[in-house]
Length: 79
Image 1 (tube, rainbow, N blue to C red):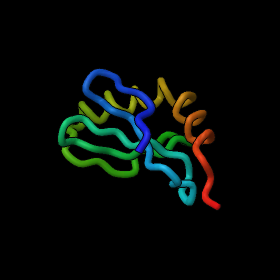
Image 2: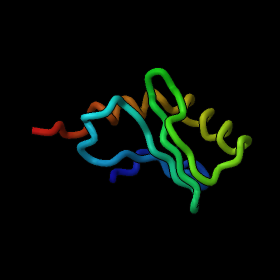
Image 3: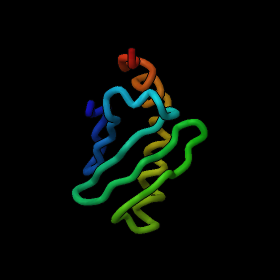
Image 4: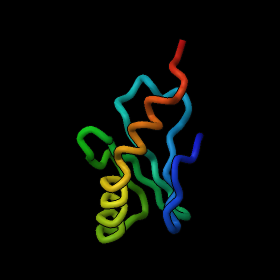
């Protein structure tokens, strides 16, 4: 599971070979976790974050969506 970026306590990553789903990013912060679709940016699920924290994480996803999409399309495709 390649780490794409770490911002503060948040680690943004995706699992290798997840190409059967639309572009998305996972984020973990200690025991909290979430998954965001990237186009359009939308929360898929979250565990442990309160609403304020989710808002902050979403803002980070929005600010870094270009990088996340670039890395998503660089990953090896399933054969």
